[in-house]
Amino acid sequence: MARKSIFDIASHSLNISNEAGRIARMFHEDDTLYAHSSGYTIAEYVGTYDFSEWKWRGHFVDVDDFLDSIGYEDIVYRCESDDTESFLTLIELVYNFWELAHRDLIAEDSELKWGGNFYHLEDVMNDNLQKYNYKAYNCDDRILVIEDKPEVTAVSEIVEQNLAIDVIRYNHRSLKGELEAKKKILVALGTELEPRRKELQTLNKQLSEDIFFMLNNINIRHNNRNPKDPSKFKKFVSKMDDAQLEEWYDELYQMMLLAILLLDNADRSSKVKDLKSKITVE
Image 1: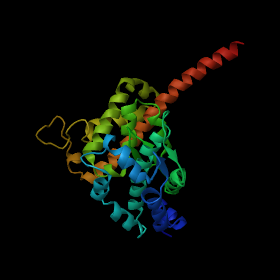
Image 2: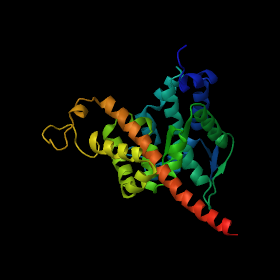
Image 3: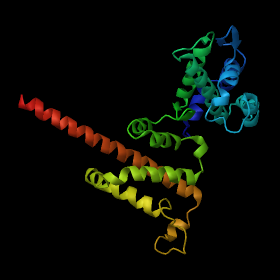
Image 4: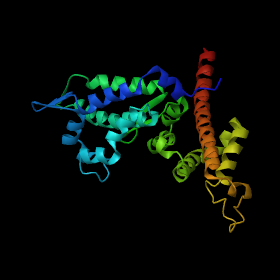
């Protein structure tokens, strides 16, 4: 029997068309926010009060321009055909608008009120994401829907904020096939690990050697595909296609997350050792 993907399993447990229609209605049709004696859909409210100041608005002039340009209606339409990718995209889009409105709602001096399905919409989105093992992350004032990996969450809570955003973003669907963007993140992770390289060597010699070998030899830190630079050139790497390179980049990413967690646990073990010595003295 052929192995089922998580998307196959999830799709059998829900009706994407119905779920997408429910989310779209609560986002774009139902009044769930009330300000200055007026009712607003989430799309209307964000368009009136938030969109012009949103860091990620890009060059779009208003919400209608934004939704038209990204093909909102087409995304919803594709969901009717049980298109999982479109469904995740819809949730990510709506979640960004929901979060902008929610930020205003919980502001200390807010006069904004909620009603109807405002909070229910969040529950519906989270429940659907959970079925696909995805999660909504708030990354620098925007919501990214990313595969839910415990190691990603753990590392993002350890490293500084900018690197944490990159750690999360690496798994985003938009970076699939984007080797240059992935390389930059891997280089940043390498920079994070470099000062503790000797310590990592002590904890796991093979992991340390593999990480830094790959950083230096599979076209990440150096151009290993250029025969005009014989000191860096690696013939085998030069023959890899982009898909093969990306597979190795993704493997290296996972190895680097493990290394960061190992180093963090070493710090924790040191504290436990100190605690044990104090308790034993008693």
